[in-house]
Structure formats: structure tokens, C-alpha cells
Image (cartoon, rainbow, N blue to C red; front, side, top):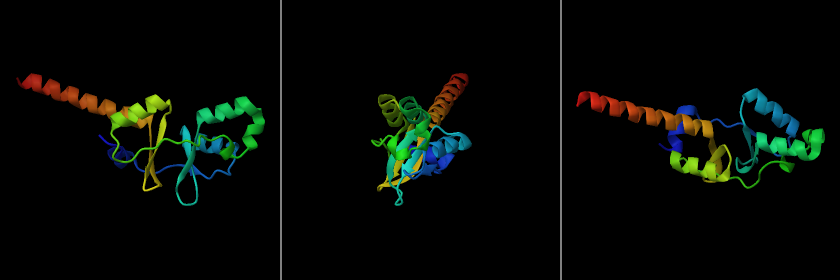
Length: 143
């Protein structure tokens, strides 16, 4: 299975914010949308950063409550690892494990086209394993 299939099933909608918005605004959006990360983009749709719950916690640990009024650009991760729709689930799992992050923006031709989370990947991987398991049971039953 590829990232394209995941996006086809879950949709390609991505919650984004521009870098000048505050951490406080980001926290409220994360809570409202019940998500763990926001992609930070520019006006042309390019990914310039990502702000995860972990980034917010680090900002609060460093600066206390004053971090809430600072722009996202001060606390976002700027070295964003991305993938394309052609990436396999196995590649995505490896990338997330090695990088120790849970959200991977999907970028093609320099533009954001979706995002996959570890939850998306695990859900599809479990479904694949269950389907293989059922096929094996059916095969054994028919033998």
C-alpha cells in the first residue's frame, strides 16, 4: 500500500497555519481539530515548517506562558521531512521511526498535497495483516 491509497481513503485535507500566527492560536486549532500537528505553509502552498504537540511543550518548558504569544515561526520544526504519494507504508513507518515523529507531510512538485500520521499508517497496516490472516484461514479451511 502507498501513501496515495491512504490519502484516497482518508482524504487529502490538511490543517495549516501561516508562520506569523501565535502558539496560542495553534493550540486552540490543534484542540478543535483533535490533531497532533499543524503544517506551517507559505502563501504558495509550500511547507516551511511543522508544529507538533511536542514543539508546543518544548516552547512552554523554555519560555513558560510567554511562549503562547510568540509566533509559530519561533517554535516550529523547520527541517521538515516529507514524502510523496508513491511512498510505501513500509518506507513511511521507517522514516517516522528513525526521525521519531508522528506526522509526515506529503509534498509533490513543491506543494503540500496531504499529510499522513502514524495512526493512518498503523490502521492500514493492521488491516493488511488481518486480510492476510483471513486469506490464510480461508486457504487452510479449503485444503
